[in-house]
Length: 292
Length: 292
Image 1: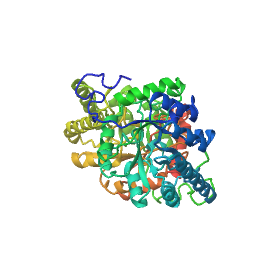
Image 2: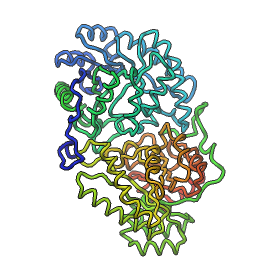
Image 3: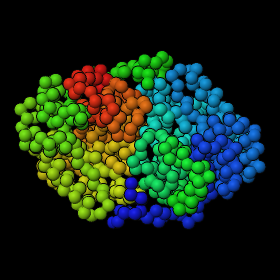
Image 4: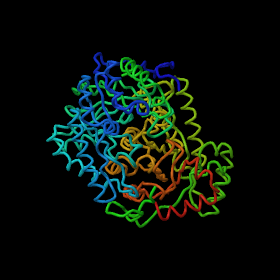
């Protein structure tokens, strides 16, 4: 594609033209270097590169061991901006839904052990074989209500993450910020939202919904939407390489009082997951300055 | 995937369980057999298979010639449920936007010549190199206002089609039914919406928005969302092969007074475009009865 900002004519906006002056600190979501580094490598890498935040996925967390990870993260002086992920509530039968609740309980305990700012909730899609979207949404709501008391007791904020509508069938029937904020309002204390620019940038109602988000934004995730996008999950771009006006969305998030981290979360089998992880971190740091 | 409706347990809904009793007639969107048939073949095929509606794309229409196509469609007794497509308004400069307006004028003339029920508007994405989503949306609005008088004069309804948010960057910054209805309200007479289940099924606000659509629904398009979906454009499924509760959405559409055709529009490089076109039409007829 033409690099955004290079074209001529009035519709072109220079990248970062409207960037708010202040910018929150950077956090590395471990999936960004998924095929290169385990969690211990990520912790060392963040410390070495001066990245003050980290957000582990549970697979690398389990591989390292929760206690060892918590200790090493603490010793490195890193902030855990989130744990990915809880959720995945819908299932075809009661046993499946009960297993999901159990898994969420373990995730809450892990988030508590790490002192994570939140547990990111990827709520789940349709159960296999189902076309019942309202039913799946009811399962998500039920699941959240079930685990909320435990999350509150552990001091773990459940960060409901609306996922891009293209993931509705198999990953998340929670698709818009409006929907996430409605659920937050119903759940009350202990529930928040995770705003990922990749999932919400297209939403014509985003600016208006953001006005309802004060006090609710528990996490802010960044990456970019590539043109063309060749895969529904694994073709995310580095900030600045795509078409999302990230500074505009960051401005809305900060206008609602969020002063937290910008967490870089990139799924990219074909590009970033193939790069040297140290160079990926250097690029994240650079783009955090210039394109977020 | 597990065939929808086959699983056990309470979340599973049998396909078609809630199907409204009456069902509108079938229409073939020519893209469904894109790599097999030209427009003359499609017209003959519809007549031979007893499919009473047809909706051509402009590439096959131009290849056949508008006058010849109009005559043959009329002689075959087919209803033209739409012409695909107008739109694509945003461009990086004024010359590009003017060229888009000219192209839309030709499309309106073609739709008029065919006696099409509507001109389907795929409104366009971001101009190359742009991150200015509000700017692109303004170009869409401006373009629609510019061509509307001509469409009214020709008696051609502009059917604004909200496209799935995954197409926002490069095909349509018009992403939701709410947005399309807002635009309709602003444009007034001569503007309507095209409801394609593929584009809107995920929308948590769909049922509520549908209540605003009375008198505005100019077209109803059907296909299905496959799990997994392997391409953002060219991996649509045949009705019944995916996870969309099509009868539920059809019920909403009909509850708003739409008694028109169900138009089958399937982009499928890997499957349906490879099949014998006569068998594809047979399958469309069968699934129209059982899965729409």
